[in-house]
Length: 107
Image (cartoon, rainbow, N blue to C red; front, top):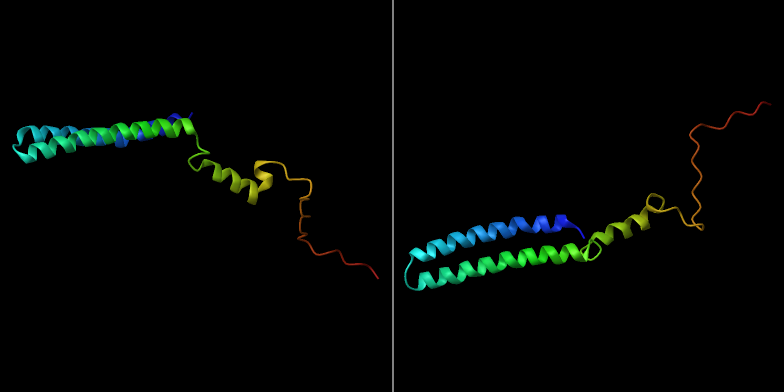
């Protein structure tokens, strides 16, 4: 379980709830169809805030492999096998290149 995903979903949920509160507050002072539209929109914003929190909980429980975190591990295993795990026996390490020229042979 990754709690930071839940924390990350709280920010948009809070923003939606605050906007929904102000929309409902403005709709209370309006009249006619505007009041009805404002009430529907305010309730819809609170519903979306709840969906954002539910999504954060579901993403947290599902884990990073479900939401793209597993791709990084596969990429690291494929392109840098020695970094994440020991190299396979059939992949012998390449010899290091020599940087100095060979010594001159006496004649």
